[in-house]
Amino acid sequence: MKIATGTASHRSIHQVTKNIVKDVIGDINGTSDFLMVGFTPNYRSKQAYEEALVKLSDESGTTNIVGGVFPGVATSDGYPTTQGCSVMAIKSDDITFHKPYSYSNIRTNPKKGAKIILDCYNKIEQKNKMGFFLTAGPFFEPDAYEQMKILDTYFAQKFKGMFNAIGKLINKNMGKNGYGTANYADEILSILAKKNIYNMIGGATIDIDMVTNFQFEGINVLKDAMVGTFFSSDKLEFDMDWTFDKSQRSDDFNVSDYLTSGYVQKINKKPARKAFLDLIGISEEMYNEEFARYANASLLYLSALSSDEGEHVPYVSIIQSILNGVVTTIPERILKKDNVSADFFTQSGTGIQESAFECAIKASQNIENPCFGVFINCSNRLLIAGDKIEKETNMIKEAIGNDVPFITFYSGGEFSVIRNKPVFAAVSLHGMIAGENTTKNVVF
Image 1 (tube, rainbow, N blue to C red):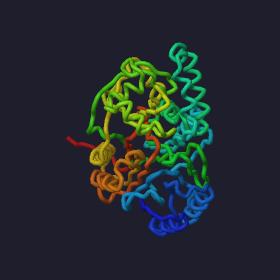
Image 2 (image 1 turned 120 degrees about the horizontal axis):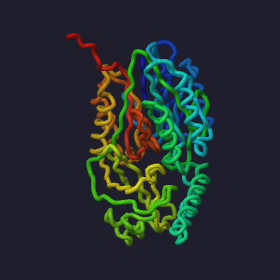
Image 3 (image 1 turned 90 degrees about the horizontal axis):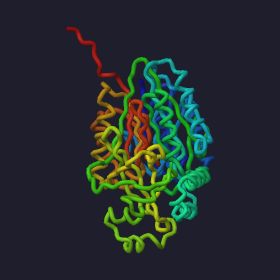
Image 4 (image 1 turned 90 degrees about the vertical axis):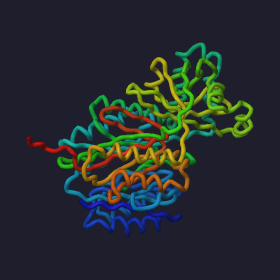
């Protein structure tokens, strides 16, 4: 097995691609079997990404390419970058890299996307399988919050059934441009888990400005789509896990009134926005002074729900000055449950680094001699860590081994099927490790 990883930074996509060809593609003996590619969104042009993929394909000798555009990318042997590209190139007789798949209408028809994944999965005969897929990430229209004001009316409180349907229509309409990512990604995960897909790691492509949303399948550059592939092997094992920074936990609360469109109307039986601000210790006056004069400025906070297994799953809660409720990334299937309770968690640079170490340790604990890793990290964690983000990469290296190559994408949503359980989360880190299993034959 031969694996090469590398990250290149430059304002020119042509120079970045040239550096990747030299330092990554050139490090593989013979043609590659698979490329995982992440570009940053600052190059903007679909044509520029297409030309880069054609160059990478020609030089590597493969069209087995999957990737997309992310606010930040990193590899084990390079500094993270917010203006460049990261690539993992693999040549191996021990792993089968299956032909990439794609689906362009994923926002409005997630069931069809799940079926495409399942069809690919069911064709694989090897016993060990790992899925990898990317979807389009969030994008808010300029008037997104204006459309939601109808959900604050007296009639929305009184006639929940009707306004739940209205909320879903708003979601669907805005979904054409990215709204509702939590719901369609979570629906895909739930279908896959019910169909006994064991492990699958995924994330959402995103631009920090929520403008560019490209995904790569082979040499094709898609927009607002789903792309993915499967790895399979009779020799190697695949394992994975996830975590988030749980070091700073504060007040808890109950979601007491909501619409399943992802809009919380009441928290602790009080209007949600006011109750939320009280819980995090910000007065209405202070909030209005900082945010109200900006039409699209929002306050984001991490709220984590208690799961059936007793652990927490984090989601983003969004407070907007023109709304009385709170917009949430909590999927519908969870909001429908009784007694939805949550806790607040505050993220820190140190906590993020420690959670990266935890994720890598958990993902690799059943693997002996790891061969490579793939990590989907939250772009908000990138913002929190700032110029200390390379410490997170170092923590992963310490956990799985300094010589183990891996790639990291900073996404707009991290989601996985982990041991048959769907996990859709925010401000989290998901990791997959490939290698030999620790199980040994014991002779007595």
